[in-house]
Every structure is written in structure tokens, then in C-alpha cells.
Image (cartoon, rainbow, N blue to C red):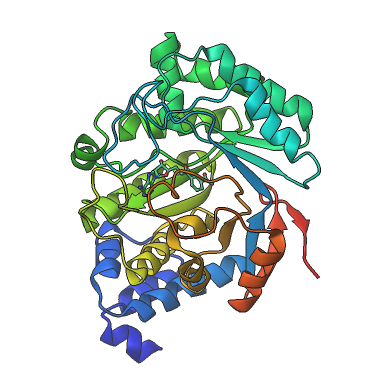
Length: 366
Ligand code: V47
């Protein structure tokens, strides 16, 4: 492998990794630029196996999107409807959301993941009652709800600080934040693709505040649209800096752009090799973050399986009611059983471990 790494111009990076030294911005750019994807993957796999061996995590989760009414106008989004009453717009009553969980009361769920549109008219009480209602039905289930973008929106809409919003939601049962809304932190990209939602600094500040409240969070990166390689590396390194400060991130999740039914539909989707490379480079740069998740809904099931050899150690979970990606053209199923996920992981030559949101082991499948 040494000669291969040398031919790819990556021996110094391999040496740094051997010495547990930190990779730089320029190293990140070179990992994106080298044509030898397998060399990058080999290095990332070594880091993955050093941390997790063959173990590959998944969870039994349920995804709910209580409303798709959203006053932001992100160019990549196929899910949002601007106003209540627009064709396709929906907002569930609390009873409807709680009913969705009751329908699944028999399932051994460990997590509910909720991401919503930025609805301009719902009161703060709606979200607090939602959390309390879900906890009342299933006190054992972890509530991973509302992206940092939603937290910023609530603060502006209800005249509260970001910290106060987090504290009140935490009080009502919020356990952690999902990683959505990060897109690409660079101001140039945000101005173009999501100009009317919170900026990268505020996004990260909200995660910092959540970590200070002892809530763990995830963080995503939406790639394969107008971002440059510099902007990808900058994004990942901003995550690394905050992780140095707080240690509160659990998983980094690359999200492949899906072009159907949105304002960026002329762009092609990212290729499988780009997807594998993004997972690998993230694994290599994020020396202080435990998990890289290959979200099978976004990358596709087969590429997610392959990503388990390119740095990823987690596949997300059963998901069950996903709409954001399916409205944007995802051809993946919208749910998988734990048996199917276990089979996919085994087929990929890895060892399935069912985890909870905080990566405690729930079950080691026989
Ligand atoms: O922020 C929206 C992305 C995110 C498109 O924390 C799109 O475990 C691609 O938060 N093409 C929401 N991406 C998803 C999310 C998430 C997903 C998986 C795991 C976790 C976690 C969180 O979906 C949005 C945006 O970046 N998105 N539209 C699209 N057309």
C-alpha cells in the first residue's frame, strides 16, 4: 500500500495519520483532488477500523415531519410549501402527530427524529406540547428534534434568545438536536442557496449552546451542488473546531444533494465516487468525532453499504416516514426493517450493532 500511497502523493498524509497528527486544510484539499479514490478510502477505512473495528451502528427510529409549511426559500428543497393553504402544504394537529406514534406503540423504537418547515404561525406552545405529548406516550424514547435553523427561527419569531428556546424545549423533553440545516457554512453558498435562514456562525453557536446544556447533537453537510472543495473542507474544519471546544457532536452526516422538484433541478446529483470520497475525507479530517454516518436514504442503499469501507460506521436507522428526500427524487425505500438493515450490513462484510441515539448498545444481533 505504501507505494500506492506514494504514487497518489499521500505518503505524508499517511505518516501524519500514523503519528496521530492532525490533518490541515491543504491536506483536505489534496484528499479531494487526488484521482486515487481507493487510496483515500484505504486511509479512511484504517481510521474507521481503529475506532470501531467492523462494528456498524444503526437504530430503530421514526422520522416525523409535522409541517412542511416553511417561510424559508432554500433552492435545494422540494419539501417546503411557502404558506398554509398552498397546494401540498400540510400541518398536523398535535393529535395527528401523537396518533402517528400511538400507531407504532408496539414497535421497539428508541428514537423519534423530527424536522419541520419554518411555520410562521404556529405558537411555541405547539412544539412544547408536542414534545411533552410524545414523552407521555413513550417516556423511554429519545427525542431528537428541530435543527439549529428551527431553533434560530423560534427565537426570532417568539422574541426569545436561542439559549432560552433550547432550555424551554429541553425542559419539555427535547433530548438532542439533529444535524440538518448545516448545508455548507460558507457565506457565499448560503447567500445563494439558503439566504433567508440562519448563517453558519449562528448554526454552530446554537450547537455550542445545546452542548453546554448537555445535549448531544449531530451535524450534516449538504454536498454536490454549487460548493467548491475549499468550502467543503472549511465546513468540515469548522465542525472540528467546535468539537475541540465542546466534544458534543456525535455523528457527522454527509447529505448528497437530490435535484428533483426543486430550484436546482438542472444540476446533476453527485456521483457514487464523490459520495464515497466525501465520507472518507470527513473521517480523515474529523479526528475528534466518533461517528461518520452514511445516511442510506440520501446516498442510496448500495453506496451506503460501500461507504462502510470508506470511513462510515453508521447507517442511521429504520426511518419509516421520510418525506424530505422522497419529494426530492430519492428512489430508496422510505423505511427498512431492522432485519433488512442487519442483512445489508452483513452483506457489506460488517458487523451490525443496534444502538440508541447516544450510541449505547441496544442489541447485538445474533
Ligand atoms: O437540512 C433538504 C437536507 C436536511 C434536500 O441528525 C436535502 O441524524 C439533499 O436533518 N437534497 C434534513 N438534501 C435532514 C436531516 C438529517 C438527515 C439524516 C440524519 C440526521 C441526523 C439529520 O435534508 C436539510 C437539508 O440539508 N435536504 N432537501 C435535497 N433536495
